[in-house]
Amino acid sequence: MYTADLRITAQYYENYSDNDTPYWKPKGGTEFIIRNIEPDPVMYAAPGETDSAIQILLDEHSNHHSKYTLIDWEFIFAKPIELDADAFLFEMGIGMD
Image 1 (spheres, rainbow, N blue to C red):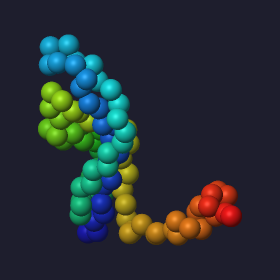
Image 2 (image 1 turned 180 degrees about the vertical axis):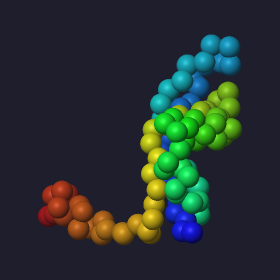
Image 3 (image 1 turned 135 degrees about the vertical axis):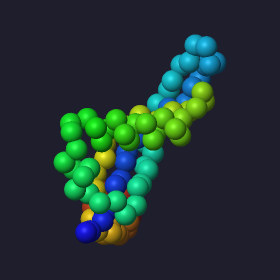
Image 4 (image 1 turned 90 degrees about the horizontal axis):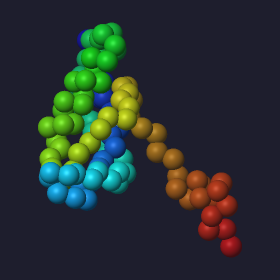
């Protein structure tokens, strides 16, 4: 059996009103991670089942002032490869004097 990390990307919202008439404003993305999970049962789950389970977990981290909605999820099988920030900025033509 092998495991992987499940990375979850969610939209973060803040409530700019009161609890009776909420006005939710998107404020950016938030990343969640579930570590060391066996990927096969998740990848072969019924359509929508994984999304529903993730949204329930995100709802548990939400309240009247802030909430999260699922954007996407993916398995991470290896550690990320870090790229150089200076090389990136150079390729964009930023900071070149």
